[in-house]
Image (cartoon, rainbow, N blue to C red; front, side):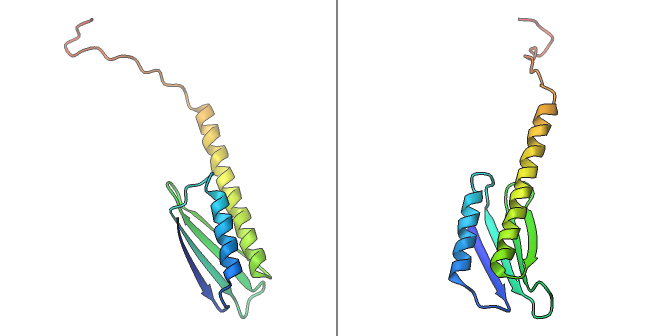
Length: 117
């Protein structure tokens, strides 16, 4: 998994990056993540001031979430909660589709020319 973290209007923190890596690693059993693009931003004018945006590149549709809160850590944790919700929703949807999908019986094809064996 490739991790790309960008920061805007705040100093990068090693503990924040380690927390993100740990949370992403915990998602790996449920979602194959090829690349994670994380954008952490502190707004000087908006409230709440901190925003965390995640773009997880995975097989199938990518997972894209963003969240904001009054602390950077809370914004990141809120984003991971949303990621978990999306992954859970996809799993539920996939399981329901498998239950509803009719079973297809594969029959043996006859040889060319209509001959029976």
